[in-house]
Amino acid sequence: MSGVSAAEAKAIAGEAWAYAFAPVALYNTMYAQAIDAASPSYVGGFNRFRHYDRLATPQDTDIVTPNNDTPYSWAWLDLRAEPMVLSLPAVPERYYVNQWFDLYTHNFAYTGVRTTGREAGHYLFAGPDWDGAVPAGISKVFRAETSIIGTLTRTAVDGADDIPAMKAVQAGYGLQPLSAFAGTPAPAPAAMPEWPVWDEAKAKGLGFIGYLNALLPFMAVVPSEAEMFERFARIGIGAGRPFDEAGLAPALREAMLAGIAEAGATFQARAAKETSSAALFGSRAELGADYIYNRSCGAALGILGNTKEEAIYGSQQTEPDGTVLSGAHRWRMRFAPGKLPPVNEFWSITMYSLPERFLVPNPIDRYSIGDRTPGLKYDPDGGLTLYLQADSPGPDKDSNWLPTPRGPFFFAGRFYAPKAEALDGRWALPPLEKVG
Image 1 (tube, rainbow, N blue to C red):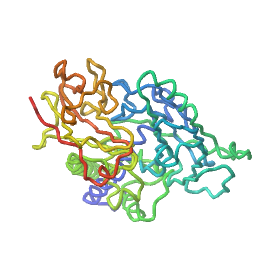
Image 2: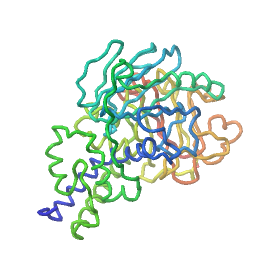
Image 3: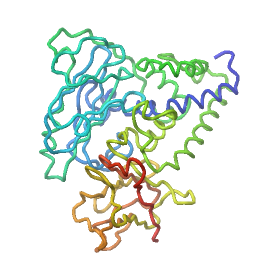
Image 4: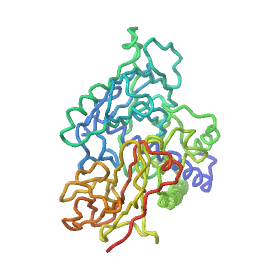
């Protein structure tokens, strides 16, 4: 890194950290699920599904802010050798969605009830360099910017008695290489790289550069980012390049760490004010001119959230004075008459501890509450009051109780297939009221 001043290194490191935040956070999940066979989250490698047949509990920690509405099915596809074909069954009634994301965390494609309907079909997923022929029987072709992609598939379940029927739907989700689907000779497989072992502490410092460099061979430089990557190269960032933090001159190393710290503080201050996910998840185009911040903020608040047309997420992260919400107090959320969440599918509010953003253990094993919660009581005027607190609000209110931890907490409202008034901002999640 000769010729780079400390001031330049500081600025570039901060810019690169902001750029890499979402892809590096995603690498954490990919490493656990597709690479590390010793991980309890391991799905079996690339190009296969792993289905979960139960709702999440506090023991599920492979992704932050897991939902408690729809059991997950995960798959990671390596598209370097050839495309993969997704086969979907006919699903006459149940809600399901296959969210498809690239290594940037951009949601570049959707299949499922809202987008491709309830009929059976076959869908081809191709990487950026594929130029082959599309065989008969393919319903639609999706092209990705990156040669490794993933799906976070969600399949609705209505209580424990519904799990066998839900599992039957999951079993109908199929993946196969294009050659197998078309009955043609398979190409030679692509060589698997030596993936760096995930280290959380390392990723939070200058080690993020090593993880980004490991991902970049699968992420062709976008023309609009070429000049930015020329700057990044000055501090050792590039596809497949080794990065030796210990070999940095002390002044440069300290400057780069200072740049990361400043960028992180600026980011956290801005992200703490977010109350809606509408701008934070989507394709590169949908994320807009501020796509780097938007995808980073989405990754920080709850990585791999849905694009707004599929689901909107709402929250309140602090009290009006900026204090983090805490279960040391009692809280109430009141939906006024006619102001219940406007959705075409269903909605829920899920509770998480901070800073972990995992589900909260509690005496009634309730991790979310919503319109499908058995016994939910509506107010006499047609409104709805929810109680968010660590202890029971009383036998007459327990039906509407969402337990909090006793310390800091974060909650996420999920509104599936939102109606127009939720999409355009005419409806918003009501603020919490402190009642004790």
